[in-house]
Image (cartoon, rainbow, N blue to C red; front, side):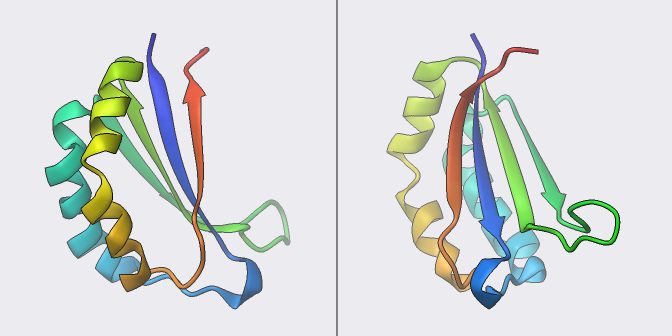
Amino acid sequence: MPVTLQVLYPTTNDTTFDHAYYAAKHLPLAGEAMGPFCSSLSVSKGLAGGPDTPAGYHTIATLVFENQAALDSALAVSEPVLADIPNFFSGEPQMLIGEVVA
């Protein structure tokens, strides 16, 4: 059964996020380390949280894995990816591991 890893970068506490660094450096690093285990990746840049509401997140990345074993393998090699986060985000990301149900 497919599983996802979502990494959410909240806009709380005046956090900053360097989208250019994220696209040019972090995503290739993540692809190199975790890509062999990942079925797909999508990234959404926050624009709004609804009508007349600021976005609650700078960005949300969603990685899809064929199964839990593939996710576990990706997480086992994720240290360089996690260590890179302070280079583009000033806060603490939130992570959600989920089961794909639809």
